Image (cartoon, rainbow, N blue to C red; front, side, top):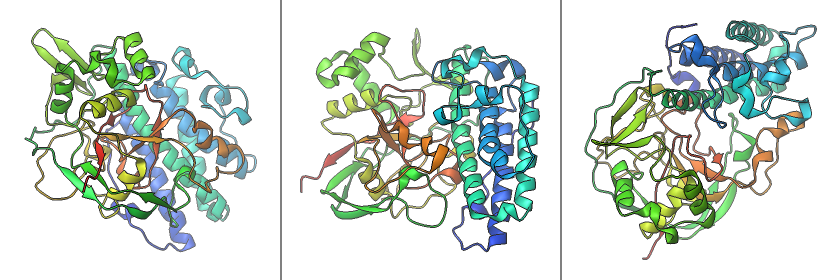
Length: 440
């Protein structure tokens, strides 16, 4: 099942512009085709046996990602808007529905790896049929209807979310196979980072949240005002070296640093290092997509839980930022291809020394934990109908992460993007940036 590896960013699709109806459809069709190819090419280095692995209950098999992202277009667009057009294969609704209770029964997430049917070959066939059906729809007059275009845009961004999940899950599978999958990510050159600094921000009434005519998820809206006291953020994310100091100071052994639930979690799971760190006889190693490496102490630390991030912040006499603070800090910064997003294809945080006065690595490299509970904004509303299950139903017992990561597609990311995970989760590319109240 190997195909050519190809991941790139289409800069034209990132530009903000006013589209005519025709241009809008053409742009979405182009982006749809590119995103579909990118997902397949992310899977292309794998052997057929790798497609069905479910390394942990959190992860999903590659085959499932390929099928589910196709099912999304099939269920919410093709069957809704194309007369007498069905690309169904047997049990596709049960197998590839993720969590939509309103759409019927579905396979439990922790059992996705036990299903050998549909075959990988059949999943690709289903995928190809879905792709062709959406392209044909977009070529028709119906394909220019605003509701259809909105759903295709949602499907595109949904698939890009799964590109990140796909890479997370491939890494988990390779790790549990002793690194033998050996995914071909690029190697970065270590660079000595400048000493950590604090950057001051003036508080007051600020506006956050998405406002515009381009795509955003429902949880990013509406744009609204918040009040912030003066605050400071660390210029750079916490590095591996900084976190190593926490480890060597027995930070994992000091209950006074930990939330009760966090302390119970690390005791129960016997956690004393970030995920993918291992202590060998000759020192600590870190597992990356291409296998074990020596730890670059200047890289941002990654794969830490909210509990670990919070304990580290307490140990440093600081705190985790509010999500509003991180959004305000990035208002004047650009998102561009100099940052370490998926398209760079390092697929790991990288170190580099930057002498500028701007915040470093606020976008890309690692998602940064915030102290903000994942809740709706005032006036926020879920999408209508079945799609209302997309985001809002998960607004319970989770925390917001901001900034994107080295496995987030750049064309998918926005400054207002709100990622979210339960506080014990570590398999996502999560890191830390510290905050503190301004004392001036």
